[in-house]
Image (cartoon, rainbow, N blue to C red; front, side, top):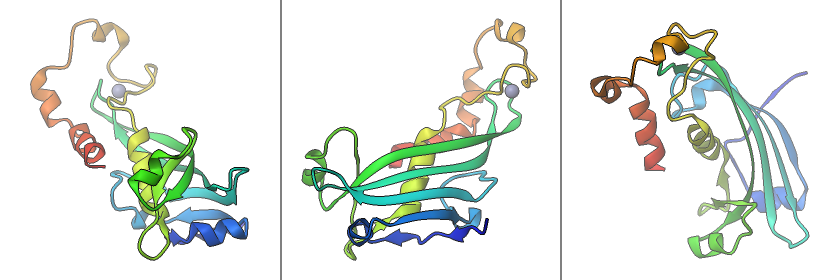
Length: 170
Ligand SMILES: [Zn+2]
């Protein structure tokens, strides 16, 4: 099946009025804030109104990343799957009125939401703080792990400190 490149920004209100669904991808090279991305982001988007007349954006996306195992410090490939429901808002006050089952997403001055930025946030937030291999693939065995913690010096230089700081920025 031919996959379409998805629009970076979408007017969610217009899209919900038309009950639009999109299936396609964002090219890996368009993704600025996720490190070591190894695939395009495959994504489906659907826009609708719920019974409370709230605009709902349903996102289902997956991407392949290369992470660094925090047990043996070798890279490994993993797939991240992001699924969430969002409701567009114009302010923090409006965000607070949303039911718990929707995440707020801010509408910009052009009446649009930045889908790619939203996906980048979701991917970064879904990453484990200390990713590790499956034990059968890891070069450090479970038995070796018994001998204590990673030394503090290593933690400072670990590449996940960067991802953590990205997460905290958002
Ligand atoms: Zn490992």
